[in-house]
Figure 1: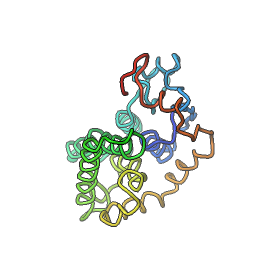
Figure 2: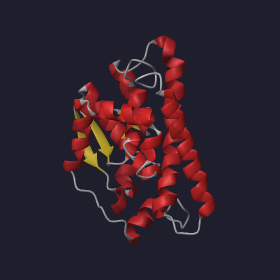
Figure 3: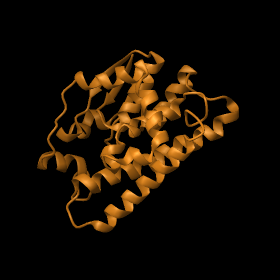
Figure 4: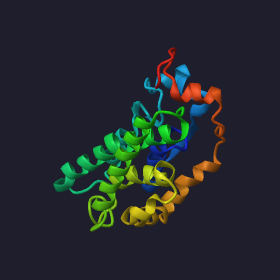
Length: 227
């Protein structure tokens, strides 16, 4: 059985969606990052980068959500496009991995958690997050899913973050992203997505962002440097 180390943030949730879609048996193991679980030596042995998600599948350990999606898709032979679209699949998967995720995450940080007075950083990340989401919306204008008519692992990667767009860009953000809104609604309607969301009731995670949580979330191990 796959051991799935997770919390409820976008990257673990996209892996949860794949596990549910593929019907793979898994054991969800909570990693409460606001309580510092990611720095436990046992977890650092699984992911030295101290991030979730990570999986242990027998003798195989995989971390980074997009690597996990690709590993699981290749392991099961499911939710992959035809070989003729492999380049396209890798391009959009990396678009989510290197664009959507990092810029959205930094946008959230500077909008909601960073000390005030960092206007340049805030404007930079809001602009880049919005630009990437606008590109995704444009891609979805003429097709139901990122690669066309077929639902794939790339859509699961996008879904993890798309759920958070109002928190990333503001409550009215979907008004300017109608194709993304349609996409999100269609994935949310899938039974596997509903089962993935039900993980919220499996374990309790620390909700408050107090000083201890800030230290664990935003500082590097053993230093005062920002993580």
